[in-house]
Length: 326
Ligand code: SAH
Image 1 (cartoon, rainbow, N blue to C red):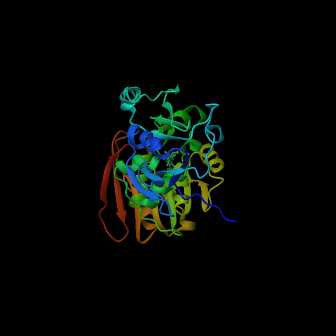
Image 2: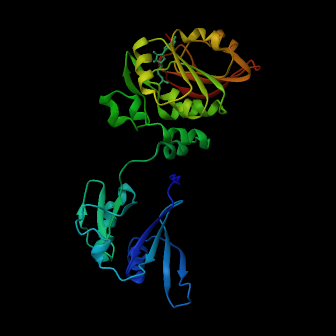
Image 3: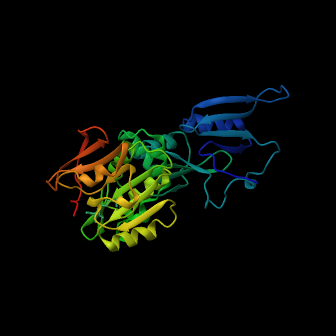
């Protein structure tokens, strides 16, 4: 027997009174009606109603086939709720007012969520919890490659940051990982990864393993990653964090020299800034291979360059700030 999660699709809610449920979910909460299902036997009225609950998700209100006591399926204990609908953070007060006007009681308030009950007693949350999948922010920032976006949702960044920074792990900024080094900002990791246009099975050299987060993103794309790190303690720590990832080889060495034994590489990604591109890296690229690298002597400001083997000038992707290549 095979079971797999299909992603958000529909939530089915059994209701005793479809019209009352529509009044609540559509009339009060404002979920748009997508489809009405008539009874198969031609009886008047509807068997079910589908309401939109955001992209790719709908709520199916289904008339309970047998009369049920509310206690059969509601949560009188008020410890559970059926699901939460997302509201905008700034809309909480407006929702409180709207619910009061509609005569809907708020049965519980938490920091991020208002809880109400549907006419059958099921508890629904209206939540402005700040969690967003990494991909939704990256998409807003201009990352388009769906495989890259999916890789970011599949790798937990918190597993690559020190315990004291876990609470900030989902923020789009670099974080301290010790030894004067940082885990790169997710947007920059995404920008560099996307620029390499990787295909599964390709060989990628990474210079500056650091936390191993970028390594994990690359491995999630199905490429073989050869990653060099100068600081032994960081490499060891990254090795632990990367245990669950396949196709990763780490070594403690000076990345400016590349990894001649494993060359050529289809792509090279450098996560620390030299003052000029190390010639060994361009040499170890396969024909048509791509190198993405921050370059510049100023520690506060470098150019993120994209080189393609066979062309003698890079394309500048962005202005960036990386730790120096040591
Ligand atoms: N992608 C990493 C970035 C880490 S910061 C992450 O997101 O965690 C850059 C890393 O490059 C640091 O760990 C630093 O120790 C390493 N580094 C600096 N100079 C290096 C060199 N010459 N060879 C190998 N690694 C180097």
